[in-house]
Length: 163
Image (cartoon, rainbow, N blue to C red):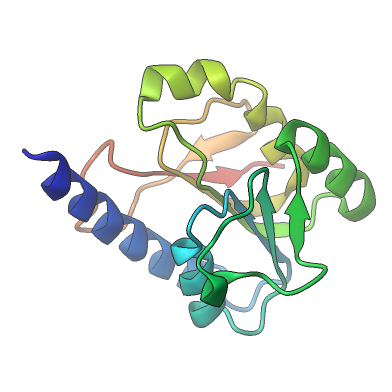
């Protein structure tokens, strides 16, 4: 499969998973956290499908499409290893949905580079919160859940925060 076809499949899976997650948290209180802004496409989709939610975005190098810039106060700029603990100290475990959208595109590299991230995600996730990621996250409080139909195995990962 070409890299272009792989990219298209990834985006289709991502949209399907985000839409499923939005429906899954309907009626439950909590923040939505987008870890990684990039161009802003995913954030833009989240704010469209979850217009009533407070969505906070974390990014070190902010450079989205101008139409995808989070509003003042909802963008947390800086190294997530520092900004996530600060945010957790202020907000606690209030996230109903966390989308981990930071990746190098190489799973082995991601596991090493982002080894610190699962503890921070768990510290922000409310009980029964959904955590979505493009790479497998290993943490004792995160239990894998089945993805919606049509998402190929290994393309995306979903977890529910236990306890």
